[in-house]
Image (tube, rainbow, N blue to C red; front, side, top):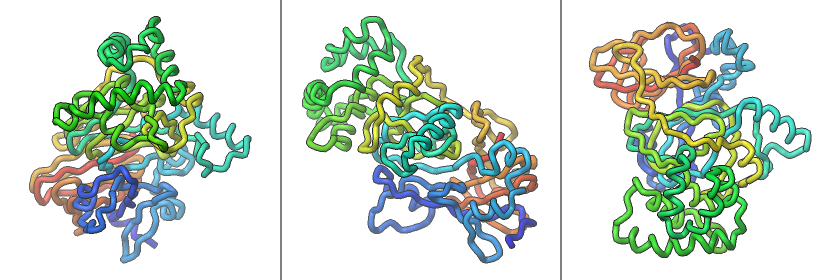
Length: 403
C-alpha cells in the first residue's frame, strides 16, 4: 500500500509526442535529453486512460487511475459524488511549435446526447469520423509560460466587414455578409467547394509569400499565421485548407507570461505558438474546423458553435493570499492557481475538498517530510490532506484543484 500519511506524493506526468510539439522546452523542463529531436508536445498530469500519471511512493510507481480506484477517498466525498468517482480534470503543460487545429467543444448536455446517439448508431469509439468520444464537456483554462498566440472566438461584425473589405481575396464574400450574419459567413466558407477555396486562397499565398520572405509579416497580423498554414497545413494534392478563413475571422490574441484565457463550450479557438499550462475537464470531445488532417464534420461544427462576437477576456490572476493567485472560470470541474515563493517563504493552503496536482515551473521547494521538488517536478495531494511547502529559492508553482 502507498503511504497516505505522507503530505504529498511525487507524481510523474506522461509526455505526448504530437507532431506540432516543440523540441526543447519540455525536455529541458523534465531534465531529459532529446538527441533525436522528437517533438515533445504535451505533458499530461492526471488519470486519463491514454496517459495516466505515475505516482511514486515507498519505492514503487503506480498509475494514478489505479490508485484512485484503490483509494477513492483521495478524491474527496463531494468530488466523488459530483463526478462519478473520477478525477474531473486533466492538467497539462503544452509547447506549441506549429499551430493546432481550429476546434471547439460541446456543453455537458450536448456531449451526453451526442455520445448516446453515436453509441446507438454503433459507431466504434476509435472510428475517425466519431465526434463524441465520451459524455463530458471540455472547457479549458490556460496560463502562458512564454509569450503565447491563439485564435479565440469570432470578431465582431464591424471587424469582420473591415476584414472582407481590406483582404483583396475576400471581396467576393461581401455579398454573403450583406446582412451581417456571422453564421452565414462562416457557413459559406465551411461549405464552399474545394475548387472555390483554392481559387480564393492561392492568390493570397502568392501575394503574401514575398512579404514573408522579406520578413515584413508580424505575428500580430493574421497574414503571418496564414503563411504558417500555407507552409504547414496544405491538404493532399496541393489543395488549400479552409481553416485559413478562420485565421482572419477569429480574434487573434497574444497572452503574456502569467496571463490566461478561458475557452468555454462552443467558442472556436486554436493555439498558434508558445508554451502554457492548461487545465481542462477530462474529455476527448472535439469539433474541428480546419488546419488538420483529422475528421471535420461541418454540420456538427455549425450546430455546436457560438456565433456571437467574442471580446477576449485576458485573465490576470486574482490574489487570494500574499503568495497565491487564482484564475477563476465558470467551470465546476477545475480551478487553476499560481503560487510564487521567495527563498524561505512558506505556502500553507487550506485543506482541499478534492485531489490536487501541483507542478513546479521555476525554482525548488521542500515539504516538512523531507520531500523536495525542483523545476519540472510535480506532486499529488489527496483530498483532506493538509500540507506545507517552503521555497528553497525563488519559485513558481501551478496547482490544479476542484473549486
